[in-house]
Length: 418
Image (cartoon, rainbow, N blue to C red; front, top):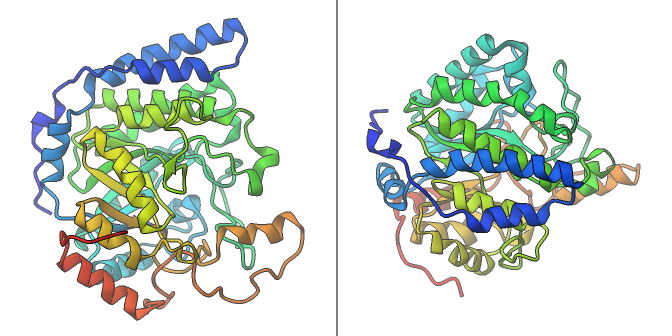
């Protein structure tokens, strides 16, 4: 694709971060010595982050290079998680090319794709060769890419090698976190991840095929139902420390693409974290105060999502919803795409082709795992939770694909969400 990124986006900016620093100090309950060390590390990271954040005007000018962003979170149907997607033995460019071709035929323009630090640590050279191959396939299909570097969701004990088979009827039974509990719970190990962030950003930070860097997916997610017994105690504090470092490392590599980390704790149209008394306030504040473009997740209906958007509009930055689609909760293409289009908010739903991630099943399918019995979803659920296409490329609902195409061609028409 022939998009050129203007170097003016690299100009530094000083941002008042008093709110976020207050939130971090308030959140810590470490002993005094640990708190002093914690605050020192955070302050050093934040000083680097603040100086280079894009201005709202720079972010708007970047956004103007794109049509309305419409995309999806992507893992091929042949992969249960990020590791199976990217490991040499299971990396499948034929399937990837086929599926991204289906996406292009529908009209999608961007894929959100998760990387993993273990692959970099194992063999950075061969990992980046596979990333190069993926980007070439995406570019040939006119699909821009948003890479995600870290992820706090699902299994906190990732391991290289053969990945498990899906648990029948269970949503995302094999997805793994990137860094994982062992590194996250040890502040002294966070710097082990620096070479991964810097290496990826150094190699692809000027690459026009990469549109956005989503540095950290759902930091602080406790995964209480599925993995609570092996999760990190007081996880949000540790996630915040790593998030600040990730932004500092990424800023230092001076990419031409915007950096973001999306707010995600939404309930009944209100962001948990927006109030200083919330347990997620420090993370929420940091993400919004340091992202070049605002990204967020919404698995709620249009009215609640619109309320949440209004709370984010005060930042006067381009916005992208990087996760939506939970059909049973009225988070659907039909309910949300018109809202996003009318406000020029990027729309990226979770899941594309039904496969080994099994995200057609709802989150509550994990109840059968916790209670040590099967059968909660022995049959295909109705409706599907996530995903758009069957494994053969046919639509789960033809009406949805037709609706998506119509929305893409008519983006910007006003709507009423009340």
